[in-house]
Image (cartoon, rainbow, N blue to C red; front, side, top):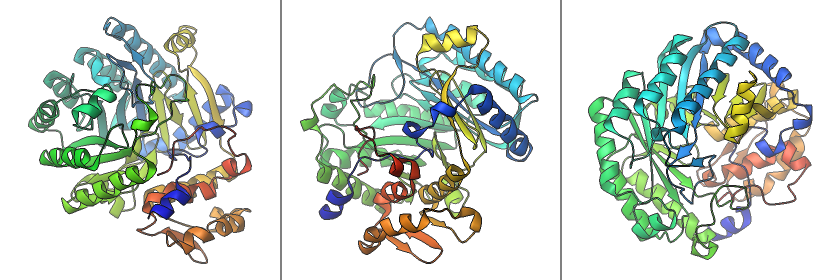
Length: 453
């Protein structure tokens, strides 16, 4: 196992999209061309499946030093109203582009800390969105809650607005780890919000754990997992800590790299943690996700409906995902568009009655084929090129480059298909990298991705 880790533990994307953001062809991007792909995709798919909304709520009261998300640290809650006003304005501009009421299938509130915002501000935002849309049945509305500041009123308000899924960031219960990552939250806080969510009627509660954090040991990780399982969340995300302090503004300088587990130690945390989840009745889903067997996410895996996008794994999929809020990314299937990353720049575009798009990518015919293969691998651990529409000129070279992974027992390649073995699950990102034609064409000159293991 250590030999495989040493061989395949290289920087690589997490493939929540293809092409990945560093390989977007921004020179050929224009907001006008991107919005044309949105109109095309919306007309193709809205009546059939609806759209998804991702709403980025960036404010946090304190900085967690493990976090690489776009956020603004403040304790001034007076910022809430103007930000909600801006997101409402952005939604209204998108409605003009769409030309008719969309059918909303999914909503996810992410951050930042969505529960930084008062319940009445969240209600104001969502009721405005609902006023100009139809809500699909069934639908999947979810939000991220901070155990320290999520109140009963937050959860009750969002429940009344159709939310049935909530995700709480746990990370680790060890006090030394919590101090290092500046995220001190007692088990009792997580227990309170988990039990309250169930009392209100939420049908899916997720807990996020992170392995590879500073000062983590298997003893502390095992304690965290057992405490987590005692609350029996419906879903678990077991994320690998992505140490990317070289990226501007991520705030990962709060500890020394020597405090982090080594590659072998980190892999052992994952392998032992994964086995403990399985022993305690959870099933593995895709990369870094687990659920109870009766959960909808596992059922979507069995039914082959599972999907992966910028929000992670989902039990349903839509061709259109509109991102609202600073730094949000929208996906029309044929193109990606990202909003301004700085709040003041985001506001300035909206004040000029412009959508706050700052960059993006329009997918080529080849991109769409590769995107499908990578999505198949990330969601189903297999892909096929038996359909001529999924063949591409570089396929022989891609398969040749994967021969060593096949010899190592990580994948099986047949004449028309490829599948990832159980042994190869931890290396699915490496398999996807072999299909990543844009990255193969231009290897990064500097470190831009976290390690795959």
